[in-house]
Amino acid sequence: MRLLQCIMGASESCIKRDSERLGASDTDVGSELWRASRGQRNMEEFKVQTAKHPVPNSSPMRPHSEHPKDHAAKRLSSASNGTSDGGAGAKTPVEITALEESFRRFAIHGDTRATGRDMNGKNWSKLCKDCGVIDGKSITLTDVDIVFSKVKNKTARTITYSQFKEALAELAGKRFKDKSSEDAAQEVYRMIEGKSPVISGVTKAVASPTVSRLTDTTKFTGSHKERFDETGRGKGKAGRVEMVDKSGYVSGYKHAGSYEKKVSKSPQKPM
Image 1 (cartoon, rainbow, N blue to C red):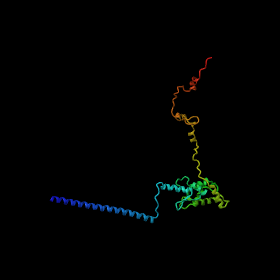
Image 2: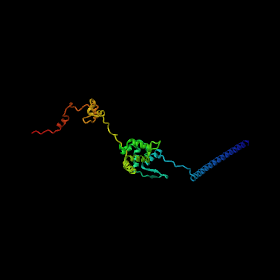
Image 3: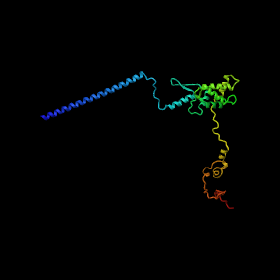
Image 4: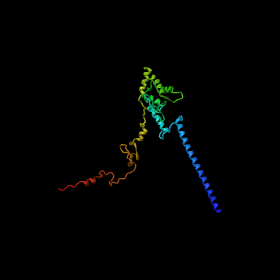
């Protein structure tokens, strides 16, 4: 009897512990569901608030293809094509005159980092020389340098397009003294319009007795002479390596290959 009571008491205690565990698990599950629903409500409220009150100076993320390097290339292209970015993101075409186009061509000459918006003193002197502004009499290279230093800013090393036109007006008064200032400026403009930097003397060979003696194959001696034929054309491997004649003929024999021709002839019929 006592054994039965012990067994019944132990089973009641086990049932009580299981019920406590189930109650705790139900509480945990309920708290997790409450947290998830609360997080979802917070996210929805955040989206609504963001739509109503956008963050100032915020911009969408750029795609991977549009890097700062690509943006710089677009900026250089727009500067050379005469376009500028508008406030709404659209490109507004800007009309470029022939004079400004020539200014940009000379401005980027010899400088891969130049944008064509300003010109240094070296390219300014080259423009005046290539376009014929410098005649050596009324306008010299010294006059060109003086005008450049006069129109540029005090601490700057380059001039803008507007300063470029001022410098041309200064030179026009010296070049065409018998014309008015406007007519003289137009004459100088016509001398520059449509022109590009002149690249001269790049492919010319140096003409000197020393170089001509070293490149003239008719004056070569020894083994170097054997490397070229009578016309000065190189023989290739035959001029560097002694080739062995394996034809079987004696050196200097003039009728090589004639035996086959004689044998191939048909025999004459006897009379």
